[in-house]
Structure formats: C-alpha cells, structure tokens
Length: 143
Image 1 (cartoon, rainbow, N blue to C red):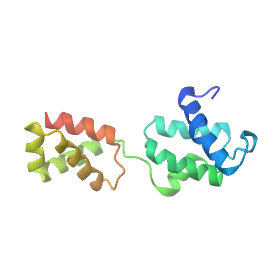
Image 2: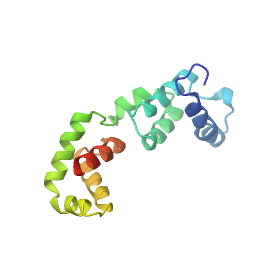
Image 3: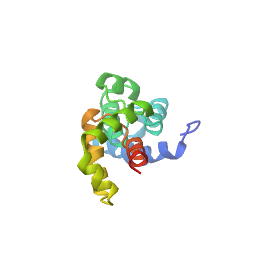
Image 4: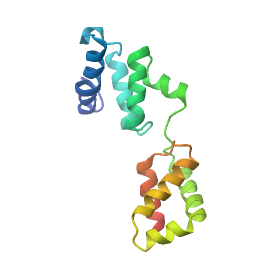
C-alpha cells in the first residue's frame, strides 16, 4: 500500500478479499497473481467511481484468476459506471417525466418511491449509472 493514493482502502482489499482468494487457491502471498501496482490501480477504479464496489468484487476475482489488470477487465467487459453528471441529469429528467405517480408519492413523503425511480433509471442506463450520483440528483430534482 506504500505510495498508494488511499492506502487504507488497499489494506482492506488485502486483508479481506486478497487473503481469502489466496487461501482458497492454496497460495501464499509470494505467489499472488496480482502485482502491487495492479492492486493500487484496481482500488483507484473503485475510489474514482469508475466501477462500484460490487463490480469491484467481480473484477477482483477476474484479476486473480487471469492476472489481467482491473482497467483491462473493465474495458473488456464494458462495465465502467456512468458518472457523467449531465448524462445522469438527462436520464433523471426522463425517469421523472415517465413516472408521475411515484414522483407524486415521493413528494408526498413516500421515501420508498425514490428507490423505484432509481431502479427505473438503472434500467434506462442498463445498470451503468452511478447510484450515489443518481440518488443525489433525483432528490435534488424532486425537492
């Protein structure tokens, strides 16, 4: 984790996922198929919002199995999250316009309606929209 942008996050991946993967494969740390630089790059993909932590679990497993970098796997699988604010705002506008009843429910205090709207937006974005950004923008637009 030395020289990493967020050493604590890298340490968490090492202590949890990497150790579990090594143990399951019957390998020691010296036989780790993921070089330190690749682990740093991978954690930065999550920290920067390019992939979600859930996607990170799948990318990590693929890195461990193949030795490929996280960036290469994300490109190959086309799983980079949509984090562009203006693109997400446009999708939010579309979802709000197409779902007047849940919008009215949310404005009347039904917070669960927001989750429905997030789900609709995820469908529109084919699961690629950054949910944290989606939630912030939807809430702002609906207040």
